[in-house]
View 1 (tube, rainbow, N blue to C red):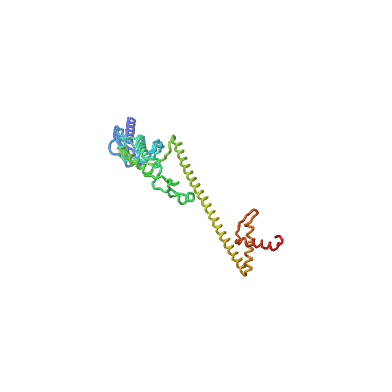
View 2 (cartoon, rainbow, N blue to C red; view 1 turned 60 degrees about the vertical axis):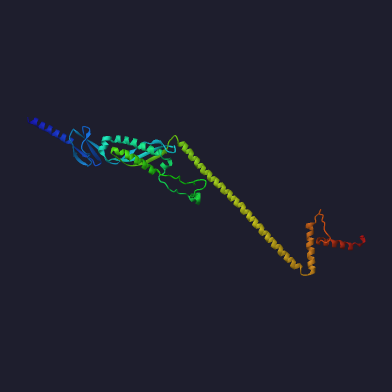
Length: 336
């Protein structure tokens, strides 16, 4: 009898320990707990960490994470407003702020991730479809690019009549941050009914769709060729301008040099004439001798081998020829 009582006492003790262990549970600091009884929540969510008690075998503990969780969606192809298909990879952070509502609507994190896939994917598709690609890629509006003036020149930052300058950024109205904010605002309202607070959303990667990537590259190559042709055209125009200035400056230099030569030559002739005049104007004989030498010097320039000259008898040029005939008649009187 004594052994039977000891065994019974041991059984009772073990049952008590088992029941006590089933009635106790601990709440971790990173968790919050929903107690369910026959599958239905009872009481308020337990959010404070520590040792807690429940009805054994009847109530169950459902832990819910209260840390900041992440949602990393799969890349999805979607069209932009300018009809370009891009692959968007989105990243978001969220947390559970109403564990009871979360448990009633979703129950576990796997269901929450699936619902976030649907909501965030849909809102991202809507936002991308309302904006052009440049609005989604660029982060801020009004950003000024850095331009190497040593390569493009001092006037590179000024627009021209042909269009925007090389290196200028296409103006945008919103930018990527505001597009992310639009997605966040629309999605946060929808996920709030599940007891979830959406903390932030970010574009992790944006890339061109494989089917349109060759066309995009061809367009980029075409744009770069247009820029190169523009540089070439501007270079040819500048070269033509430089050549024109060179010819103009050369003609100007030659004209100026010819003018100076003629001025110097005129001054020299005037000075020589002045010297001759001062030398031959001293006596009447010197004046007559000067006229004679100058006239003799002009004959070879005027009279050639087959030259016929008609002169009047009063011509100064004929004066010495006439005198020469008179001298010949005096020397040859017998020829008459």
